[in-house]
Image (cartoon, rainbow, N blue to C red; front, side):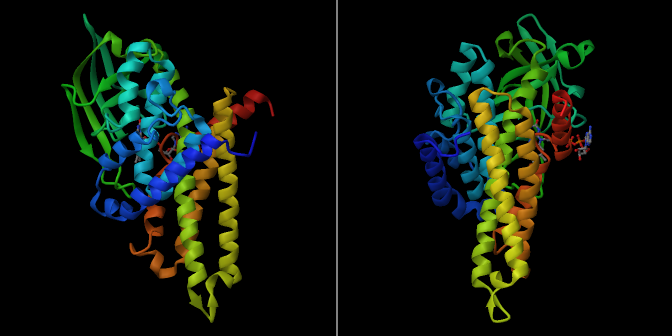
Length: 382
Ligand SMILES: Cc1cc2nc3c(=O)[nH]c(=O)nc-3n(C[C@H](O)[C@H](O)[C@H](O)COP(=O)(O)OP(=O)(O)OC[C@H]3O[C@@H](n4cnc5c(N)ncnc54)[C@H](O)[C@@H]3O)c2cc1C
């Protein structure tokens, strides 16, 4: 693996960093307080090519690959984790459709995602009773004369109330187990699609998390993505790549918190010297910086493997597991370094602690990542 970034990767990183510092970070606190969805910011990100960093250029993406995408996600999450998660889902949906969609599906949906015209994409897999185990979906798609009729409830769908393009997984053959699941492309605002409720969350207040009720939503045969019965495989494939995005998001949140802690520890004087000179504080920051570096290298390695076409599923699971678990600890250390001030909303580390928590849950919990890694160890026999 080449540890030097290419000129293109550096350019994407810089574009994302500049935007995050200029447009995202200054209003992140206000967005968090008011639970404001970042529609305008997403459209601007589309114009900058950051809603489809890993999506091919001919479909409106930047075509810059997975390493560049990870770098962009890290920068955006450092500015505002809520915006970053919308970018991550939009990129994931855009990449999925550009990989497995037919030409008509690609032309119809992907440019709307990458440009920001669709605001964001939504990945509608989870249901109230099916989270870690998506083979247990209850949403049904019944064949009609002209297509399919979808009925059921989706749970926890990031940006589900805003998305112009949704991928919705449903059971088309209940007798076939996970081979009876199919993915459908559904447009936002379609008849029969309503928002059940918006979750009142611990963090990521600038990101909406919607329960979606599909009551007889009619779609054509041309909405089937990747073939009837192929949906489970598509979901697993998309989640493998998505985990690199979530690892990157966790790294960005942790980096922002650690930088704030280092600044604070250099300024705050107790017992006659800046607290960073007290060994207990210095040691905590040293551990945090070391974990962050390791998490970054693991995540970029998983991204580089994906980009090269090599198997990357276990590398992505390891990166997500390590990056998100350590990011949680790093944010906690950052808050501790701030003392009582860290526990207030006057300093951004409080928000970082809330925002980072979910990275250990979505796109596969830490427990599920360990299952993926253990299975791969078993398969490799070492
Ligand atoms: C803010 C937010 C945004 C989300 N966005 C999306 C989205 O856009 N699209 C989408 O489809 N989903 C989304 N999700 C759903 C998310 O992916 C699920 O919450 C996650 O997969 C866990 O499922 P669950 O909540 O049903 O928990 P469960 O699966 O019920 O798990 C509960 C606990 O049991 C553990 N567990 C489960 N099975 C095992 C096992 N076999 N071995 C060991 N431990 C196990 C889990 O690790 C967890 O600790 C989002 C969730 C949140 C909170």
